[in-house]
Image: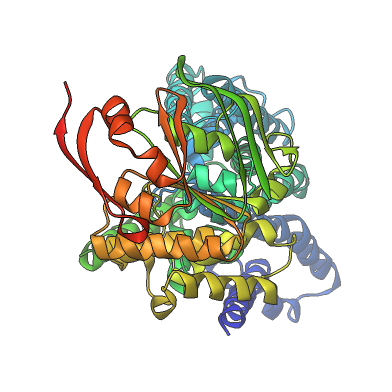
Amino acid sequence: MRSRSYLLINLGLALLAAIFFVASIYIGRGGESLVGKLHAIDETDRSLAWLILKEVRLPRALLGLFVGATLGLTGAALQGLLRNPLAEPGLIGASSGAALGAVLVFYFGLAAGSAMFVPLGGVAGALISLGVLYMLSGRNPSIVTLILAGVAISAFTSALTSLALSLAASPYAVYEIIFWLLGSFTDRSMDQVRFAAPFMALGALLVASTARGLDALTLGEDTAATLGFNQEWLKARAVIGTGLAVGAAVSVTGVIGFVGLVVPHLVRPLVGHQPGRLLLPSTLAGAAMLLAADLLVRLPMNGPEPKLGVVTSLIGAPFFLWLILRTRREAP
Amino acid sequence: MELRVENLRASLGGARVLRRLSFDARGPSFIGLVGPNGAGKTTLIRAVANLIPFEGEISLDGAPVDSVEPRARAKKIAYLAQGAESHWPLSVERVVALGRLPHLEPFRAASPADEVAIERAMELADVTRFRDRDVLTLSGGERARVLLARALAVEAELLLVDEPVASLDPYHQLGVMEVLRAYVDQGRMVIAVLHDLSLAARYCDRLILLDEGIIRADGGPAEVLTAETLRSVYRVEALIGGEGRGFHVQPVKRVE
């Protein structure tokens, strides 16, 4: 009975993500639908419309799907690993490392060279910060060491990002960096999606493989170890998987806040608190939520489009406040 | 099932905690590990559970515990840590089900055998009636029994428990000891770290008295808990009386 409702919830979330995915392809600026327009235009315009669909809308929708899923999954996994409901994927420093890598590409004026340089720089930044994380915290880090090392890396890379901003030679580079940091899916190419997707997929697989280990961690590390889960290997899969997936996501889209933190909290009332069972619905809900947010930012007909990362934080933060108030009310 | 511990040595933070410790045990048996604070009791069972590095040899049915594959070891040795807690508000049934993790096949849900084991463990620990309650809303005594049920659900041949009755009232202390006794009577071995000597003496088949990392006495409760060992190891004068389930030890005065 209970596993059937779990299945139904996952199917429902998958359906929601699928609806938003399709909507993301067909609905454009100001909410106008591509399908409606197809009848009104002639043959040459139709092939142009098809091109827009394939080269503009599809990568955007795919990014919404992949990045949302990545953030939902890794957020749930890190909260389980660290046994802390406030954990989020950025905690281990890989996403700010990725942001720094991408920012340096802008800083040195390389971004104009190829559309691939920014994501390359981002993934390199994520990998380097993961390496530093392991050097700082050792092979079998304690939870506290892991968090401290992650915070240190985040702080240092953010400082370097600010340094790059303040020393940037041209105001245009500063403008580019700031807008990129705000996080967005617009004007991303299929090549960038193809580049980031394998990292996200590999990272997601590593993270998904920790589901039962995270369940065991509910009772602490010693109990998890005596239930047959090698702690070193479990942490490595969760941390490296998160770093790869989130680093690749950030390197293409910039920083998108609050999704990884909030989505697991949204899903818990539906499927319970067991960390392993949270992974799949959190993945699906993350994809649905980010696709929906990306639809929301393109609703205004005129003026500049609000950046996605700004919108997710604008919606995410008040929601989180409400969550805190509710938890406080429920607490004995 | 046979547990052999030979020349076991272990250190914590550079300090030698266990020094050349050896004993054999054959199941079914309820073994109480007693001794003053800092004697090395917890270190000993953590070494048997393979949670800390050690020198010497610990083997279960002839196989050294540190060379067995973790999942295979997890099916044979269950461990209940001192003051274990659930970090998430799971239902009682879900917490107990965690004990079946070593038995689950990859990508498969719990089998009927797992379901049976979960029911049996909840029954034995008498927690079935709050199976749907959130474990964090239970009282300390109830929660201790739920976590014990989790360890029982593994259905391991060897169950290691660290101070299972600490912070429980007398009613729940007796309850936990009876559960452990019943588990042994199903043909398994339990090694429990205990501070309450009367409880240890009443429920255990055998006591191992540790002091400063070595075994000071080993045998039946009445042989181990004598006025002489209590004075030299625990540094207390004690009143000792009764026998069998009525055996009791009452420390009355410190020895300087």
